Image (cartoon, rainbow, N blue to C red; front, side, top):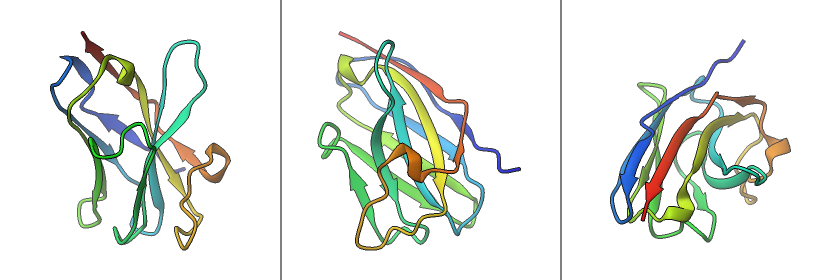
Amino acid sequence: QVQLVESGGGLVQAGESLRLSCAAPGRTFTMGWFRQAPGMEREFVAVIAWNGGGTYYADSVKGRFSISRDNAKNTVDLQMNSLKPEDTARYYCAASSAAFRGRPVVAISDYNYWGQGTQVTVSS
């Protein structure tokens, strides 16, 4: 059973930064971050290929968020800068066996394993 554990969420003010971390299942998975705000559908945020060689971001976070991974430590991080109130959501780490090759892995259905999520709240 693959388990993902997120950490690093919290309450910050607009313009501040947070770094989320996920204990990942292993280096062969494509890893993604998603988020879900109350009353909204879960949405894609960012994805990184198994070897870190490719990344892709949702337009809403491009230029502000950065995804990275350390396969030696089996961790995947999401650095979030210039946070906005609309970034408030529960953030989920997810692992996919689909290869990030030519097509970014962005659909919820592409992901096999999910963490429990960590709450990020941005006040204005």
